[in-house]
Length: 311
Image 1: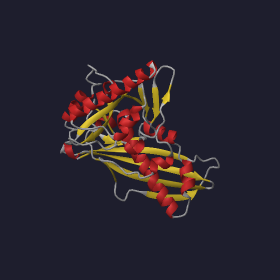
Image 2: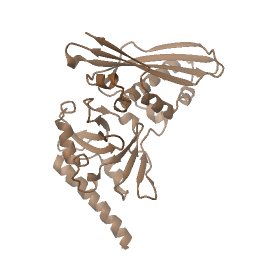
Image 3: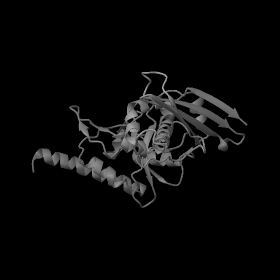
Image 4: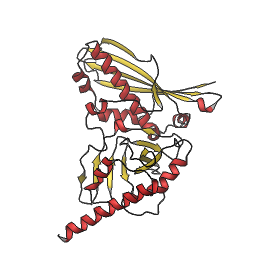
């Protein structure tokens, strides 16, 4: 065995041993796919490119760390102890964001003595927005690791295609479709060079006497131009999260990005189903209108309007 191969084998073995120690301490296992993702990567600098920004795999997954925000075990205990995140599941954090205060984390969750499902959750622990499953807008295990000259590995975890984005899509808690809110209107294009797809978002904050009843309502409006026709659709969503009002009052798109992106994707999916069911457009043509970078851009923008209702 060459010295170089022995060196990398030792690094891989140390990484596996550390993961097993973490799993033993927390009495919960990382998903099998996560082990496989790290198996052939021989660096501690693994960058995950997500739709909102870049995240880095926590250092303590590879080696001991005294930083409590890098230590999986300490971070798991911290996250699980927070009221807005305590749902009885064991949290296995695995990555943190690279900008600002770096308090945005990605994690899996599971039950004692079991392996976590390969479902990705997001939370900004510097706020009380709770957690949100973002599995449907993150292709964590599909991207190919790219090595660079600085010894870093970058993995593109954005949806690999629009088809993969809408396939088997489902809204996660605490987001739910606002009953009977979807609408479709078809008309003639008034502009020869009308944009193929434009999206606008609006929000309403509902404040009740009982704070736990507070909700947010997001409304997504889309217009699609195809040849000489224009289609206008809209849908609304209820978010059962009383803490979102702070992020709406003081625009903090970095905290509500995924809430908005998921609503946008669901609106487009409902639009596609309604338009294709009426034979107004083929599914292929509809998907051809959608550009992932544009969806990300819209989700990053402030709401066009924010209203407030108080009981």
